Length: 277
Ligand code: PAF
Image (cartoon, rainbow, N blue to C red; front, side, top):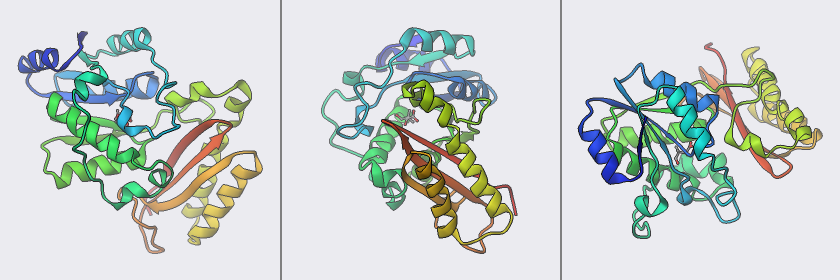
């Protein structure tokens, strides 16, 4: 696997490639990321991942400083998964001057997670656009665990006519249902044992939708109460239209249920789409 430490090395590698598929990450890789890399192989002869913990998408008081940096392990996992190249720029490579130009995201960026993490999606879209311009991939793959991020990346690509196919890849879960996440490593043993409740609660909510219930507010409140009753601090539980994340309509077709909640000092997110009508 080629390690490309900055834009110049990336440019030299890229010039020798045809089509490439791209998996942007912030490192601390788990099986979910590796699924993205394996899936990427289906889209192009060369697969490139990036590891960059992007300061622009962390708010004041968030976990930028303590975000786990696990370089050696990440390289070994990517190489074993068949990744051809890894772009691993330093902060000064990505932001040689303070970044003063930003992608202005649509209103969806201020809802759901965005309501609790002001500026987060502006930082995500800005770095994703920059990474896209540096890597120039034909395909880019993102996990559906970050459902809102994926919807916003799709909107940016469509509205700016970027010539990149965006592929969403299903969430990889532990045997007990917990969605794999880099932040699961923050959980104590007791919190880790409790954590699958987030998925279980969403599964109950999705089943009720599937069974025909359409009082969305009631469904959201019941799910939030189940979590709060078990000691979680809930940011939100929401029922939305699948794909666009528009407000759920009683006549809507497919739904996605999403939640963000805190276990101790760790914020977890998850979502589930309901099956077709
Ligand atoms: O999902 C992530 O890991 C990050 O938000 C991303 C897309 C790599 C941008 O920094």
